[in-house]
Amino acid sequence: MKYVLVSGGVISGVGKGIIASSTGLLLKTTGLAVTSIKIDPYINIDAGTMAPTEHGEVYVTDDGGEMDLDLGNYERYLLSSLSRDHNITTGKVYQHVINRERIGHYLGKTVQVVPHVTDAIQEWIQRVAKIPVDESKAEPDVCIIELGGTVGDIESAPFIHALSQLQRKAGKGNFVQIHVSYVPVIPPGPGGEQKTKPTQRAISDVRSAGLNPDLIACRCEQPLEDSTINKIANMCSVEQHQVIAVHNVTTTYHVPMLLEKQKLISTITDMLDLKSIPQTPERKEQGSRMWNDWCDLARGQDFLHDSVSIALVGKYTSLHDAYISVSKALEHAAMYCHKKVQIIWVDSSHLEDDTASPADYHKAWHAVCTADGVLVPGGFGNRGTEGMMKAITWARTNNKPFLGVCLGMQLAVLEFCRNVANIKDVGSEELHPKAENHAIVYMPEVDKGKLGGTMRLGRHPCVFQENTEWSRLRGLYGPSVSQIEERHRHRYEVNPDMIEQIEKAGLSFIGKDTKGERMEIIEIKDHPWFVGVQFHPEYLSRVLSPSRAFLGFFAAAAGCLDEVSKAVVLGQRSIGRKQ
Ligand code: GLN
Image (cartoon, rainbow, N blue to C red; front, side, top):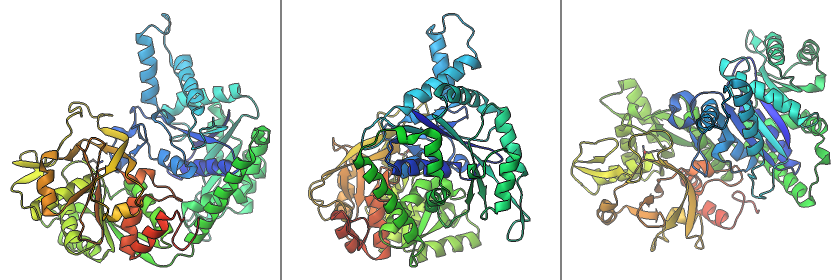
């Protein structure tokens, strides 16, 4: 196994995840099988209980793991399917070691951070790195390990120690480290000076922690000057080709190309002797096709002019990362339609007349009323849900394309019950526990007491129902598809006892689970696009294979739904282009 460790110095949040996934993508395009592991040194067992406004979206894997959002980048870039074990946290490792201690595994020894925790980390990495993750089901050749946070944080010390031991054990030619640093420009903007001191400090910190980076990736707002690269190489005692410059680019899709231009792949290929790994001509061919497709799409993005505006009406809009997979899925759909997406972030509580200030209220309503489509994504708790329902009423009654995801779908059902089916005092058990009637109820098998990992999680099938061939969403799958699989994360569901009443009033349940008990997709026939899904289609959306629910919604907002439906059923990669 070959390892590429991507660590960070100076500050976090400068795009370490994108550099790591772009490196993985580049390796994959050479025909290698690539996997990835994300290490998060926090004590939480997983990201499931963390507030989206603080930590960004919780990404859900097929097996129901609730993960850090970087795992989403890996899956999207490497077209892989990772498991919960591909995200290692301090909490998980300690839980594992403590469970072993309780069953006498350590034979009476004092259990310590070194060697017991550090050994557990290495064993975990070595075990998980071998799991096949892509469609080929081949054992991976290379594992990208991203270490979250910055080197020097108290929490990351055991991981650094474990990784330096892993580096030694793996041996020369099997382990490469990329340290991501930041080069500030002082004063900011053109004419400012590119400062190398933080990078020099970061490299000396990581070396004193026991790791010796082979490559230094420098993030900078502007292209690095040659003199800056020279200075970093000199001061950090590395060759110039070991300093990789990663300046700001128009979209993150350009980062792999930026790295490729600086010969990152041939450098890593030499360092890890990747040429010695046997490869079939098909894999090589597949890899180069993937690279061509990627470059086409990334370059194509720069020539898109028409934009389509989508009002994203949510409660965590203060941190856009809270909806990262949703915005990526919209981007994938937009690329398919040769359009740009303009997301207008609307805080749903601003749509409520009794809570918002007049200025916020008018701004928010202006955004919703002028957008080409309205999207209500997932969420938890009561705040802002009345505003979301008002936006839904507007989209439904004004024939505006609407997509509701998870909570968005539940609220669409509730809005329909209140305003069309005229069900008295109707609410959701989550949001209005005191209501007389509940259109959205607690799922029977879900554990009420505990929070972490107790929702209905992961990949489950959804069956299209009889007599729903008219469905616009189904139209994007074609007549031969009767069942799909999507990832879930919810505790509540549409009340099965109210289905008949709701359907009679005109809202159809297009998709249900295999037993027909759980409502998965809603749609209104007499509307250009009014679709709600209980699952999260954004988690499975990929650049070259956009989620159908997002694609149909976006295409309806862009006015090209018919063209897109035809193209996608024929297997075309975008409208107007053959496969
Ligand atoms: N709060 C809702 C539930 O638990 C919706 C969850 C979500 O949007 N992910 O069912």
